[in-house]
Figure 1 (cartoon, rainbow, N blue to C red):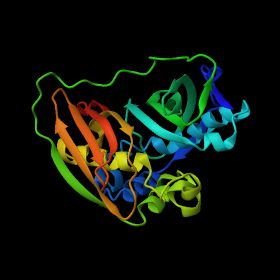
Figure 2: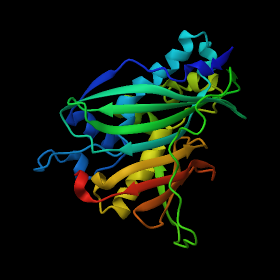
Figure 3: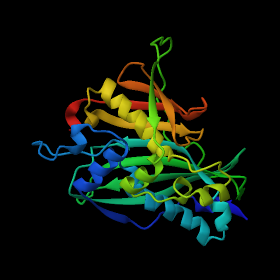
Figure 4: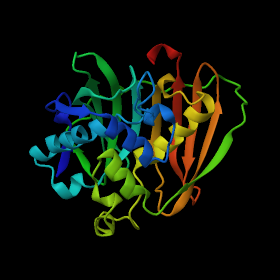
Length: 293
C-alpha cells in the first residue's frame, strides 16, 4: 500500500483543550526549566507556556492526520514508520493559563522523497474567540513507504530564515545532561503518549535500539537555552521556532546545544546527541519585541 497524494486538501475535526496552569507548569518542569515565567502563578501577569508548549494540544491532531491515511487503506504498520521530520512553529501570541484552545490540522503536501512518503500538515490553533494563537507547519516521513498518485503541494511550506551573508558570529556550545527517565517525565508532563519513548518493546518493534527522547523535547531544550541566553529569560519574545529532526537521543546521555546570534533577532540553533549526530539541525529561533507579552 502507499500514502495517497489525494490526502492533500483534507482537514481533521477540531480538537478542543482546556489549558490550565497545571499543564503549563508541568511542561516546563518536565524539561527541567524553572523559569518563573512558566511557574510563578503569584506574578501579576500570571504565567505563560514554554514556546514549544503548542506541541501538546497539537499531538492529537497529528494522530488524526495519520488516521486520515488509515481511513484510505494505508496499513497501520506502514503508518507506524512515520518519523517527525520538520517543525516550523509560528507563535502569534503566548499560550496563557485558563484558556480554551482549538486546533485543526490540514494536509498541505504529499510528496515522494528518497527515504519515503513525505506528508506536510498545517496545524492551526486559536483561542475561544477564534483569534490565532499559533500556526505549525509539521512534516512526517514514512520511511520506506511509497506515494500513490502524483506529488501534490510541493513548495507550500514557508521558507526558512536565511542568515545574512558573511556572518562570522562564533557558535556557543552548552552541554546538557539527559537523565534516564527524561522521556517518561516528558510523556506525562506534555501529555504526549507514544510508546517508542517509554516502552522498550515498542521501541524494538519500531527498529530502534531502545526508547528515545521525543524530538520535540530535544528541540525544547534548545529553545530553553535560547530564551535564557538571548531573550533575557523572557519567552514571550519568541515568535518562530524551526528545526529538522535527525539523530536519536538515548537515555541516560547528554546533548550539546549550539547557538549563535546572526542578527535581526534570528538565533541559529542545533542540538547534537552524545554520539555527535545532529538531533536537531537547521534550527532557528526568531525573537521579537515585548509587544506579545
